[in-house]
Length: 366
Image (cartoon, rainbow, N blue to C red):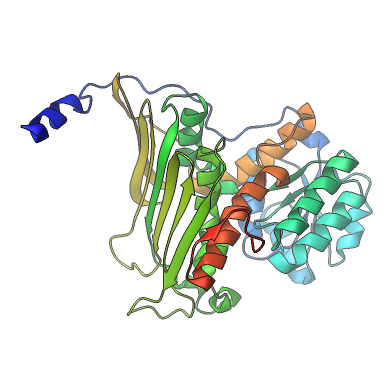
């Protein structure tokens, strides 16, 4: 009888209602031609940066890479009128460049960011923009002191499903968030012949940072209490780093959980649920670019027909938001200061996995 009563009292709404029209598409500046961009680093991820800039109508005026051949190849593919160089200081010395997009490996980013800021440039840095929180806070403060914008390419924020979910939370459609749950099953063996194969906690340090960022975004008004994380090798994986990982972030009145299996060659799936006091917004699909979002409230269930994809729309959103922030003279949504909340979760998860114990915020190690 108690179970029947529970079922009736908590019956889910069965009707449907029109999905709220939310601004989830990548933002676009009014005059992108007035904000010329220089790109430092023309490796693999630069392809997504440049495709996004081309699709968004942004003006990339210069490309730099230690390998001039790489810079020339990217120029031919995306921006034939751009200049190329293998000396990044030539870009920083140019008075016509307003923004520097840094796509190099993580250990090189802090120096490049600082030099670009001191040269008077706004900066978009690939994530993570630093490997230590203190260094991140210092660079964020430097940008603020110089009156410049420093943003981080947390491109997942503008993946269509995550962007719509973010805007649903911001609009108060789910009320106070109590739980955020992520489950991701995919195959990460593309790393076998790359430097990523030697990263100790690759899943947490590189891939999962997008999901930590979304947890920090969905729970923007809550201060985390602790993080517990663990990583294991699967019996069938060929990659060196552990491909199985999970984490839990505790908040005063909520929790975020993460489950990753990067050794899933068949039946891949990605699910997210954000549950609040007034509703639930979910996404599910076979991959990051094939997601269906549903919003459940007292009114019923709504399913927006989303357009776009993570690649390259997420990257277009990251650059577009920075350019809009420059035009409007405001802090970008993905500012370095804001990104410190994301990095605190990511770095705490890595430390917890190394210790085999929870990491509490306020702990000197965090």
